[in-house]
Image (cartoon, rainbow, N blue to C red; front, top):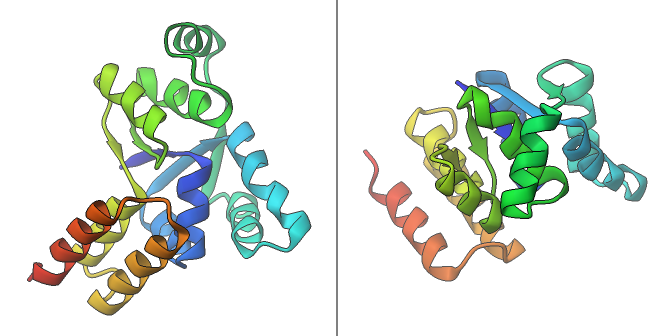
Length: 166
């Protein structure tokens, strides 16, 4: 499966220490703009930035440039900017899955009939496929709850899915 990832998803999955396992099992692509959004944190010593940089250097996370015409049309119709615009543009013609935790990006993907997943979906899928343990999956979701990116109801839902799986 080929997945086009945005900055927030890369950062969140790196912070909960599952990004490397995820990219080792999937064809993960991002854009140069998204990459630059993430690695800027390297200046502050952020481990997620250092990991993403290494994964790109090792060609486990690939960089691509979106088609300019497609990018311009999507920007015009949906007012997406920067990394999210690039992610949707990369996935548009290919129909690859978008990995994003950005609400506006997900709404545009829905409007265009594109498939998308979130970081919480990745953690759940990794658990269901026995790539990570139940404890690790719950720890990841608890960490994501601390980052405050998701609503309490959504976190509760994913905890229940993991709790009752198998």
